[in-house]
Image (spheres, rainbow, N blue to C red):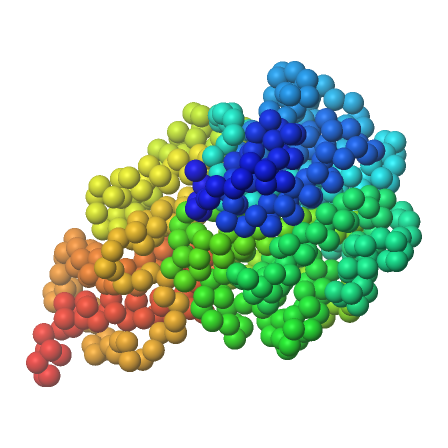
Length: 593
């Protein structure tokens, strides 16, 4: 089963026949895309050209790259698939397990270790990859064709991980538990930022459009041959597969329009800090009649662009799948369904996002310079530009949970249990405030800690652990509210108009203790009034005023832009004040004395 509907395709469907020949079965990842056969055809072509065609790197080395990158991404489906592939290639289980847990302590040669370091760095910190990394591989005896294959294989892994996160297929084999993962080598802070356009890093050969059809296609379609493809001429089969993917996935207008797809490519490239691809997609949109200023706004913050709410939701979807794949789930699919998108529209959005991540990784590994002038160069300061991407403002230097988190990330179950004990009260308080029901709050609390356990390896410490946990809890509570029927929408991000609510009691509250309720009574009045607020206002109050999330964190949890979150918070505070005013205004003021 997967997130989307499936249909039966004939066993003679060529991509299924080729997959059956290679694997002995058709993986669920491809069965989950049967609503869009042309996408399966494109993906099978890329996988065949990158993974199965004989080249400078043997299949075992490629599968090891795929395995380690899947582990770094905490992707259960892909990790299980590549683990099984290595077994089929004769690699002993003991060696596979060592590679998955920590490849740097596995029984590998220095060149193999360097190859995996390179792949993980490219997969996780591509904008910081530089000529130095290419030189390190050359120093271990890898020629440019082998390095190109390593880049293509790493890009393929990101492609498959994005697809599986977005489609939710059941693993084809039993996944390991708990899910292992690897530590990203050389964190960005320790390396200079080059932005993926400091190359090209590899040698290339000349291919003529007259004798090489893919170049003729690009020349006809774009008016020139992009540098990204010129840099891959040591592997012509890969260029052919990529050209086919452009024809089969990006060009058709039968479901998502080409403009919608280019917008997805633009926002995801900006989120990945890929200046080359942002420039390319801005130019494509300009050629389609979209003003340059509008494209720039979409890249920086699409919520402020002149787009329909449905199209903004589509871009939110692609960004979440790219930036938070481990947290992606059925609720994200349902949001697009509720915006009027069909199953095939949603499938195509997943495929376009995955293809974009493939191209982004490939370009940054090659270091190609933009084909057109970049109106904006994306750098580290832009990492958190999109409003749907979680922004962390707290440092970890004073996080009291840092030591326990580090132990839990290394598999210490006792440390995780201690974290649960420390934060159970806060998580429950958050959830009971959101859902207003003891039984549902308890169920959601269990869901929260299960998700925290599953994804603690992805916690990077840019906020306090407690803040991260409350964000997971608020998402769990919000999802339960969204699943209820006949309630006001929590996702309505339309501007808060004056007609919706006007406070009537705006006078100051007296501070005379003789006229006020007792502290316990006050607390009860506030809690009661808050629970009577419409859900979308109650939730923002809980996140900002009770749990003390930052504005950016609360906005991310609610799926709102920061300005919309602030407007909703102001309205919520006024509504709460209005509800409490009769209890806190002195009797003399009430009767007008």
